[in-house]
Image 1 (cartoon, protein in one colour):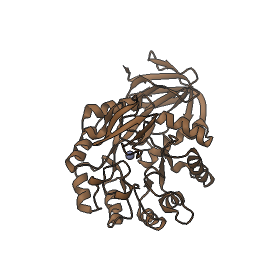
Image 2: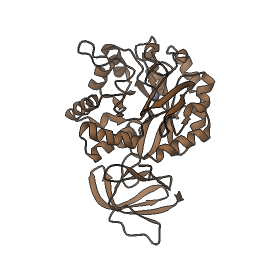
Image 3: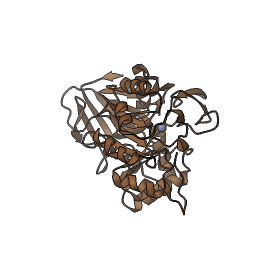
Image 4: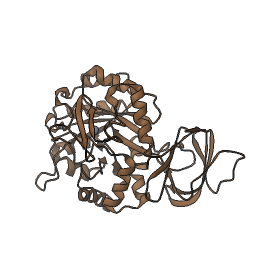
Length: 383
Ligand SMILES: [Zn+2]
C-alpha cells in the first residue's frame, strides 16, 4: 500500500455518468480534481491504467463480514479487516450490517465500526422483524416494533444508522417508519410476511428501500403478489443478491428487465449480504452467535437455511452482467451511483466526476479488480 496526496492515473477508460471515455484522472487530497486529458501538475506519482476501466469505488449496503470476521464481534480490528477485505474486491464503502442480539451486544457492534475507513455507516437488519421470516437470524432476539425499543437501540448512533430493515405487517411497524426517518435513516422492508397490501401501506408511509428482494419474504404469486409485487410497483430502491443461489438468474433478469422497461434501473442496488465466510475456504464460521457452514460457495445454518453469502461485490457485478446481459457500465451503476443515491451521498460518492471523493477502482475488461484507491491509498485487487 502506498499513501499519496496527489496521484495521476493515466490511460484509463473513465466510467463517467455520461459514458465511457479514454482519459486520465488527477487525484488531490482525496478528491478528483481533473478528468480527461490531464496535464501533469509536476512530478507526482503516476499510475498507468493501461486501458483498464476506472470506475467509482463500489458501495455495498448489506455486509455482515468477510475474511473470517463478523461485525457482531464488536471488535474494531475485525471491522477494519472486513473493510480491507472488501476493498480488495472493489468495495470502498459499505454498511456494516448488524443482526438481532442482546441490546448491549448490538450497541457494542455499532460502536466498533464508527470512524473506520470504508465503513459508511450501519444497516440495522432488525430486530423488528417477523419471526416467521427470520431466515438465518436468531428469532429469539426479535422484538415487536416500538418507539422506545428503537430509541434505546439507536441512542447515540443517530447519523450513523443509515438503513433499518423492519417487517411492515407487525403491529406498530408503520409508526416506526417516521421514527427511522427522524434519525436520518432509510426505512427498509425485509424479513417480512407482509401481503401486497401491507407492504404497499408501508411504502406509502415512507419506507423507501427493500432488503434483499425475494429473500426472507413471500415469493411473487399471481394471486398474492406480496412484498415483491408491492416493491416492484413502488418507487423504492431494491437490493438484490446476484450470487445465483439467493435468486435464480432468471428472477434477477426479470427484475432488471421490468425496471429497465419503466426507465427505473436507478432503483436497483446489488448487495452481497456477505458473511465472515466470504473470502475463506470451506468450513465453519459465525453470523452473530450462530454457526454457519461454507460449502461449495454456499453459506447455510446446520438445518440448511441459507445464511448470507460468500459473495463479493466484484463477483456480484460480473454475475449481473451475465444474468441480465447488462453492459459493464450499466452494471457498474448498480454498485456505485444507485447505492450512493439511497444513502443521499450521490454528490460525494458513486460517480466519477470532478469534486467527488477519490474512492476508485481499476477493473480489467472482464471486470476483475486490479486495484482500488481509497483514502489516498492504492491497494492491489484480488480479482
Ligand atoms: Zn443480511
